[in-house]
Image 1 (cartoon, protein in one colour):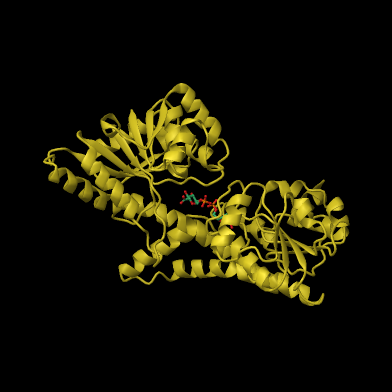
Image 2 (cartoon, helix red, strand yellow; image 1 turned 90 degrees about the vertical axis):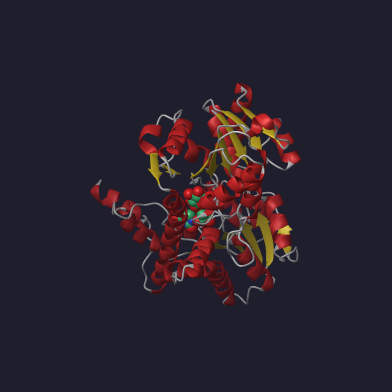
Length: 468
Ligand code: UGA
């Protein structure tokens, strides 16, 4: 099929590339001419594992092209996918201006029947809104006889694993208002071997809601666990053990139960705000959703205060050097949007700590985010490795779950530190806590009273030891 993807951001690019590899003829349209030129040369402007390799494959196949100057043949594509961004506006609602501009452009340019598919996350009713804009523009051009279908096809890609999420999804949701549109989308996904079982066809409004409700459910699980973690800290329970026990219940399952400094990124926080806004507009008091957000917003501050409180017994945090490991909202991405690391850095900076920052790939984006957020550069030093950040430090603050932090030689690191403390905001080193303590580190993490002595063999392995 000839597919036009409007918006070559993270979603549009992954979608376009994955369809192109499967043999569709894809044109990606983006207003940013520098980005278009880079993509034509095979350069991906974001960090997304596997995406650049897949792009090269598609370029070699000759099934993908990029443009900022669409022509008539671009607009006659059988499928037009909209994947422009929908940021929060100043009230927290979803800003639809880019979608509206694209809908207008479609209505002003197409000369044949069209199937428009909305991939961007936008409030329930947006597909209907797009349909109105396109048909109104067609009518103004005297082309009211053209038929325009608008379908909803939300994305469930996670940054860092977007390519594999696209090529091996749990499900693909397709929201349509007539069977003929569903047929076109079934054809679009037909090159994937799973298309028979994993396509779930529904009405448009439900499809739009599935996207929001799914993200809200994931966020709810995280905030729930973070709240239970707080309680664990007051009653000698260990959240990692609690998580292990809960995950084993098939009704609950293991995903999205990891505790930490809160969820961030460009999706979960924004989608919760939009859902709360939609509810309030509908006269519904979205108590759960608002509480989930509130718990999340409080996480970074609580973690930062824990670090501050620790140093009280050592004469205070002011002047202390702290290594900050990881700056992005999660590992495997260079995205700093709504990263919970930012308020932690701001708090520690305000408390007078000297911060030595390191992130494996996001230094440039982090520098920009810090200067935009007003944190600036006071008491901040950028380091080229986690080990260099820890040199002469009084503590390590682990904020992003980069797997490389697990492979570091803490034996060597400890010899270069002034004071041995690790504040683990992701419980990433929890399994090694006994060893870290043996090395002399004070190890503080989420959901466990810090001064509890760790068992020699972690409880999670104890069952095996006792039965072997
Ligand atoms: C999220 C959803 O997972 C995707 O399905 C969805 O398509 C995407 O939003 C979107 O709407 O575009 P993403 O924002 O890339 O994907 O990141 P997640 O992997 O969901 O992580 C979000 C945040 O939750 C991160 O800060 C992460 O560290 C945190 N998290 C995740 C936890 O704190 N605990 C967990 O158990 C899982």
